[in-house]
Structures are given as structure tokens and as C-alpha cells.
Image (spheres, rainbow, N blue to C red):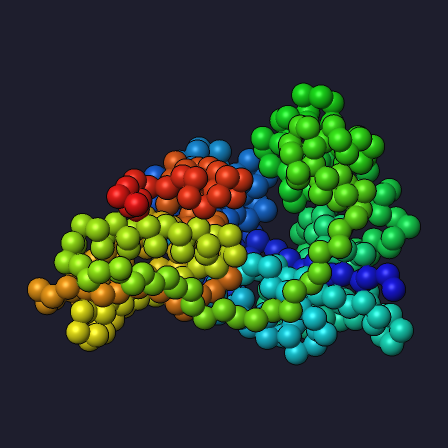
Length: 382
């Protein structure tokens, strides 16, 4: 049976949420971000007309669009609105995957026998907008890749259906930049050899693409040809992630313990970013040699930043480790998670830090999680 996969994406989600609570922002060029050295987390279509884009340094954005209104952003509001949209979709959709705080996949395979998948999706999007006030775009096609690209081409506030017979005619003229797997470095590499459209990419020998970009070459070729068998994974809300370390012999070496905590924070933060989670609560756990166990926690703004989470974790350790007694175990847990990509951290981080995290994540993904890290988090005695 041919699959029917829907991709739904809330239009300029942060901007739309801010306009819900303050109608005076409607129609204005709006930038979500903050801090003297901060960057743009999101921006309205009115601001994009001036060249403003996400992850751009805020100072540059204001030079391009000096009349823009800057709002710091409210992650509590965005999380609440995302949860409301999720509930509306869950009530109706047979299978839903929440890909990020503002992005969803639905598997409607087989529904044409009863309702008509496109008509049903249109009715669902109308219901979402009516119950939440948030504009949403969507596309229906045969797999995740085509439907996601279709949504991108439908924005703002648009929708489309791309049947199997129309997949190649839809994809072929588009720039390879439209493909989810193609970042700027890959785009530049392909452009140098004349590969600028998805159609051209789809005609390249797989072996050539493998030589250029490794094993991802095969996946990219498949997606350029409209082939993507990735399933829609049913959504379940994860509550927390954690790590613990039981020492081979009880210790009072505070320097070693803090090094381990820093390493845990870095590993867990990387996991958050890979799985598109943000945390708002940091919990430290220690167990003394007599098996007494104590914990201490602290609330933080939603984040997945190593430096923020490690700093809070170390501060908590200093507060909870109050006895001059050997430690048997130390643990770190991030809880109260919400779905969201690293762009959320743009509220607090500058462009240099964001670039650093992206580079480190790419190295870890390619060469392994221990390929690169902060020196403070490595145990050089191992």
C-alpha cells in the first residue's frame, strides 16, 4: 500500500505565539532574540524581507532592519502552546511523531479508503488554527522527505498534496538547499561540480556521491529520487535523561568528581541536542560511602547548552556535598524536558558559541561521542 505521510509545521512559531498575547505586534517586522551579543532565534516574514534570518547576530539584523521590534522570547509560553497543538493532533491522528516543538509528522496510510487523507488533513489544520490561533502549513505525500520539502514550499500558511506520480516533477527543479540533509558545506561542495538542483543530484551515480560525502551519499541520492522509507515514530513524551558513576573505590577527590560531572553534562547535553530536547531542571545526586544519598536540583531556562548545564550542575554539587566523607556515587539528571531544536538556545547564546556547538556535534556524530570535548570533562588518568 502506498504511504500517505503528512508534514505539519507551525508558521514562524515563536512570532505567532508572541502575536497571540500581544496583537500590537501584528504586521510589524519582529525579531525574537536578546542580549547585546545575542543572535536571532526567529523572525517574522516582515523582517525576512530585509534579509534577517535565524542565527544571524542581532546587531547585524538590526542594521538590516532598524525598525524591527525585538522581543526576548518566552519559552514557557512556546512550550505551553506546543503542548496544546500536540493534544489537538493526538486526539485525531492515528499515528503522530513530534519532530520538534513546532513540527509534526502524521502517517495516514489507508485513510483514503474511508475519509480521504488530504481532506482530513485540511480539516485538522483548520481545527488547530481555530483552537489555538496559530497558523500552520502542511504537505501530504508518499514519505517524510517529500512532505517536509512540500511544506517548506507551501509556507507561509499554505498546503499542498504531492502524489507519487508528481514527486519527480515537484522535486527536480528545486535547489538542493531545500533538502533536509544538505547544509551549507555540502551545498558549496556540490555547487563546485555543477550540482545545484535536486534533479541533477538524482541523476548522479551513487558511487560518485559516496566518494564526495561518504555513506550519506546513498541516502541523499535516494531522497533526491523521492525515496525515503523512514517510518513515522509514534510520539511519547520523555521525562528525563541521566547518567551515574559508581566509583571503583570511594573517593574524596573533589577535582576528579567535578571533572566527571562536567563530562556527564557535556554528554547529556549532546544527547539532548541530537534527540531535539531541552531541559529546564538540573538534578545532582551523590551517595556517600555509608550509602546515605542526597539530591539537589535547580530550575534553568530551557536549554541544551553544555556550558549552562555544566555550570549549574557544579554549583549544585558544591551545595549538596557538605560532609567530609568519601563518595561512592555521583549522578546527573536533566528533567522537565520539552521538544525543541538548538535554536531555542539562541535566547542566551551568541553566534560563536552556537557555531562551536554545531561543529562539535558534527565531529561527535562522525567520529564518535569521545572524539572531541571540553578538557575539564576528560579523565586523563584512565
